[in-house]
Length: 395
Image 1 (tube, rainbow, N blue to C red):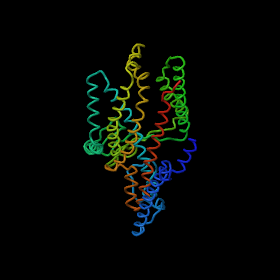
Image 2 (image 1 turned 180 degrees about the horizontal axis):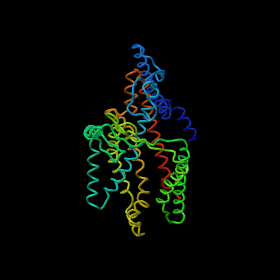
Image 3 (image 1 turned 90 degrees about the horizontal axis):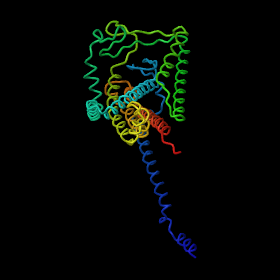
Image 4 (image 1 turned 30 degrees about the horizontal axis):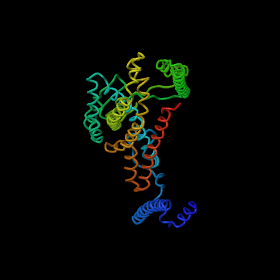
């Protein structure tokens, strides 16, 4: 009887009073509103471009660029296409992001651990660093390093120098450049094999420690393999590499490897600024570990270094990785401020000079946004994968 009544009540419920139907209706309505909004914007933009005689499409990527770029990791000159300027800017952006992430991570860990030091001076210096650099806008820090520090360096004729091969002046840092010859591929293969051997050693050490509780000294054997194996192969192959040293010719240095001051200033500012936030992430991650873990490590007779390396930091990484990912994403996006000092990153080269010359605003902005989205999603995916690898597994 009850079942029959429930069936009759359901049949009497009007469709607009059904919560499930109402939920689907409003979701469809919301999606339709969003789609209509973007269709309106796109149609409005296309109409305006047509009225101004601006063509659409990506055919402009094949046109000749006609302008030079201060720094390029691939061969480039004025006769190359706008499509190549895109890759030049992309590689310069990736270069700054990768170097900045590595340097900020190392400095941030050092400062974060220093803030927890029992040494009063080290702890206060680390605190002063964090409170100073994280509270000054990044753009001002970039200007400081570029205009106040690097622009005050001497001219090329009065360069600061280290020996007869390294020079530092207002136009950048000049280093010896390796020139690879035929047969260097064998050395490169030896480097890859050496890295594979080190990875194997690390996996062996982890398995041994997990099975027996005993550790295996990794540093010296790994260092020996990484340096020794490629070096032996290098000499056996007949030393297939020589160095191109910078030399002063006229008003500037010729030859060698040049690191432009714009890159140096941007890299220092990004590193110093982001390291202040990473230091706080590291400090909070270490303090999240129960005090009993440190006491147990001390009871086992581990030194402070062993306690940090073997007990505290591996557990703290599970807390550190998620907020650390945010800092990596911020650093990558903050690298777009490079345009303020003329560093030729993607925003400066492609969304600046190329956009001004072609007028293809929609295509260029879309490609630039897609690049930053891809870089951020790739970084997140990599960090999430690492986080899942070190996560605690229930037994």
